[in-house]
Length: 99
Length: 209
Picture (cartoon, each protein chain N blue to C red):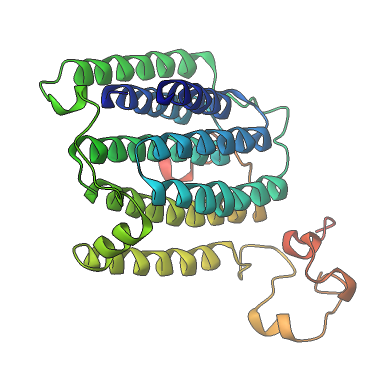
C-alpha cells in the first residue's frame, strides 16, 4: 500500500474531527472530536515514519499520545467541575468569558 | 493481503470517526471512538509501528476511554431540551468548512512533489518500530522530550485533581475540605451518610442540595 492512502485516511479523519468540534455542543463530545484530530495527526506521523524508514516519527506519535492524555485529564476535570456547579454542560451556554 | 486489511481498517476508522461525530448520546460516541481507535491500531500495525499499536490499544482504547466512560456516566445523558447539534446557522457553515479543509488537504497530499509517499515506503530493518527500538530512541536522542512529557503528565494530573475537587465558595452549602474527609460524617452540613462514602452520591453531592 502506498503511503498516500494512509495520508488520505488521516486527512479524512482530521476533517471529520474538525467538523465535529464546530457542530457539536457537548464539551465531552468536543473532547472526543479533539481525540479524533490528534489521532489523525498520529496516523500521518507514523505513515511518514514508514515512508522514510525512520523511527523518529513514531517517537513523536508517542509524545502526542502523552499530550492527548494530559488534555483528557484536564478537560474531563473541567467538565466535572462544570457539572458540580450545576451549570449546563453545553458550550453555547458557557459564555462568561465572552465579556 | 495487506490491501484487504488496510481497507477494512480504514473503513472501520472512518466509520468510527463519523459515529463519534454523529451519535447524539455521548456514551455511544465514546464507544464509537473505541472502535475507531482499535481500527487505527490495525493501521499502525500495517505501518510496522508495533509499539505505537500496542500503546494505542492499552493506553488509548483502554485507560483514556475508561475515563471518558466514567465521566459520561457521571454527567449523564444530556438534557433532551438542549439539541446535541448546533443550530442551522452554525451547522452548515461548519460542514462546508470541514469539506473545504478536506479538499485542501487532499490537494496538498495528492499534488505534492514528494516522491517518497507514492512508494511502499523505504526499506526497514526487522526490529523497526519494536518497543526496544522506540525505547532506545526515547532514552537517548529524545531524552529531553521524554522528561518534559513526564513532567507534563504530572502537571496535568495535579491540575485535574485541583479542577475537579470540591472547593469553598463554589457550592452554597456543604463544602468540604480535605480535613473533613478524614473526620466523621455529619448531617447538617449536607454531607452524605457513612454508608454512602465512596459512592457516586458522595462525589456528586446529595440531590436535595
